Image 1 (cartoon, rainbow over the protein chains, first blue to last red):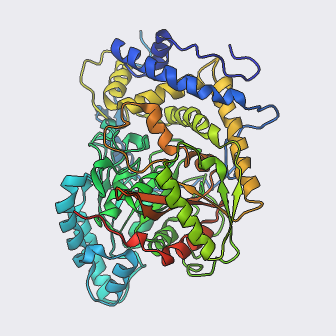
Image 2: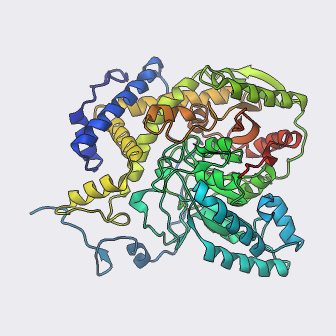
Image 3: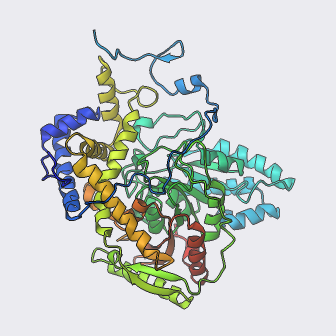
Length: 106
Length: 486
């Protein structure tokens, strides 16, 4: 596990790549897992340069122009019809709804 | 030839009734017919729609009722901008048949100004790349050397303007994707301050980095396009409410006394020596114009690559989670027994290798046990990079640096080496991290006749200053008037 905010020594392996692919819902073949493992391995190692930087007492940036709590009226600004949006799906439509495989299995 | 004109000249010709918008549109489509098979800048043409819009503009021109300087002017859009009724694919297999039911905000603004949309322009898939080699529709060739890339990810947008196949175009810049192809193709282009232009209806790559920007034949043209697209948008909560200045007002003003900072961290051994010489010549021109050049230091520059390639894939993986084939996207081959198969197959078949690589990287750095060490760390170092720029701008007005460490490289040279490709953006990434604006302006050619771009960087929301500074240099040189020969 990571300690003291230091990026740990690269501990990526093919099993982890398989797990990450599942998290990302991408179906990779065994060959692809090996290929991406090799590429990701060297990329991640090169990212460890950030360990050189002391970031104690440095706040993380998430918004670069200082915006905060941007609000607007809860009014429809763009009149896009539901059926036009449904048209974009290649799945069958039933009663203005997209029909999908069961989410919860029996 | 009409296609040779700048936007400003074309607009003047329409206004004074020397020619009509349809005449311009004819000329552009003839040019596209000849050159696009060689360059592959356009992935989709809108000939019928363009002529319809041009004919409507003809009537307005006849009646003296032109809506703007952009009225009746043919232009192309990177295939990442939603265009109602016209396929918008992000040059990805997963969206190859996607037809948006609405326009992006900037498209609406341009249409209201009288846009004649020629077509959609090639890009690296989901804007991930620096060469347009990761497009699902083939690479875009560099108009200056057909064996080389046009850069990326807005390669098509740059090539189209460079080869006079559009009077201007729009691109997107997340880590350099407007500036880098512009510099490789001898085009003038602008990465705006984060939030200066609305991203509503434009596919997101990395939500805290993405910007929209214009690409044109010269500074005057660039200012005209920016004037139309900039502004607050209630549909994009990351846009600024700051007023839009008149971007053309300061063009031609003296830059005597301008303080230019030259960051030493951008002049490193990785920078091609010939390019360095050309960049330093441009700086000498600025001295002749009365500017004061001083060396500055942005010490966290070298960490920008790592910051970007942790934070950007993380944000990308979140933004691309929606491409699961349910509401839009590919119908995959193969049997779908359960919901998980739908996701696995769609995303495996729909995404190219570079996208998969970045999604995997992003998912990894955000995953339990790694978030603090990678993503949070990167966002903290990003703060330090931002402070580099803030500190520099206390003492200088603008910074000047190269855009790219090398001129246009050969097709295939870097495609299979991700890290080599990522290094193309070392000088553009820190700017993106800070959300500040930067212009790329042509400043010379290598001995192989490959274009070189000068990067002019300013504080947030200083686009008018950048345009003024670039214009002054442009008027003393003729780089932007150079055209590729076919």
